[in-house]
Amino acid sequence: MVRSLKWTALDFFAGSGLVRLGLEPEFTTAWANDKCPKKGAVYNSNADTPLRLGSIEHVSGSELPAADLAWASFPCQDLSLAGNLTGIRKGTRSGLFWQWMRVIDELAAAGKKPPVLVAENVVGFLVAGNGAHFKRAYAALKDRDYIAGALVVDARHFLPQSRPRAFIIAVPRDLPIHEFATDGPTPPFHSDPLVRASRRCAVRRSSPRERHCPYENCRKGANTCNRSSKVIAGASIRRYASWKRQSNCHYSMGGSACV
Ligand SMILES: C[S@@+](CC[C@H](N)C(=O)[O-])C[C@H]1O[C@@H](n2cnc3c(N)ncnc32)[C@H](O)[C@@H]1O
Image 1 (cartoon, rainbow, N blue to C red):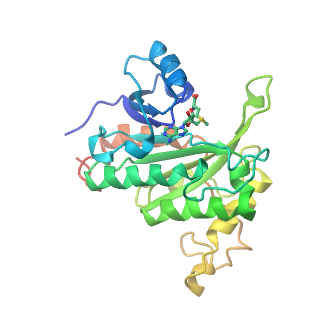
Image 2: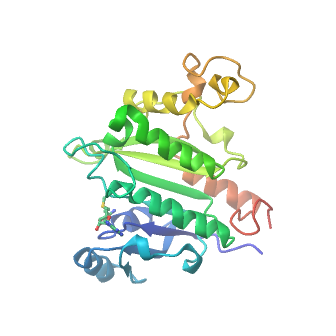
């Protein structure tokens, strides 16, 4: 079965709906959630599909529709340079990242693992705990068989306001995206703090073998090889979409089998 070629998104921490607006018209938001009634009212006054009001803690992945993209603009208070930088520890507001992971696990268990995940936050995400929190988020995605890349986009490239935000984009490890990834940092979207944060993710403690650059057959050290900070290019979602169109494959249907 080939699903409609209009992509669908799940919008976690949807607030007033700015992500939904940004994703349109390529994506239809199939489901959105936020716990703030005022923001929910703004969302609902602009969207056809009403936002589900309430904490993500009460959301069960098994109840959600299958979708191409699961987006989380999770709370930034504990990652903000203006805050305490305690990071994504469970029990903190930014720690709701783990609730999102729980819902992703439940979606996967119900056969609806989203093929693209995006987590968006302030750039403090890259440096909080000297990068430990970014690395934990990256590891959480990797543990779920996603491969992740990141970019920083500053609104000043498009508008008269500086508002840099970090985006982690994750796709299934076996999705053929190599041609859509950059060979190394691409300014301005791969800032120095992001490159440093990505390099820290490439160095894993568990096995000495893994201290090598993780790409293809490269045997250089993860700290010395430029390719170890290889990151998915900003256009990856659109390119994934183009690949999907050509291959008639809907990854989230039937696990890794194209249908
Ligand atoms: C960074 S803002 C996202 C803003 C959103 N992208 C928008 O367009 O307005 C984080 C959002 O998380 C919501 N939030 C905080 N705690 C939550 C929870 N436990 N469950 C669901 N949403 C929560 C806040 O109300 C806030 O709207």
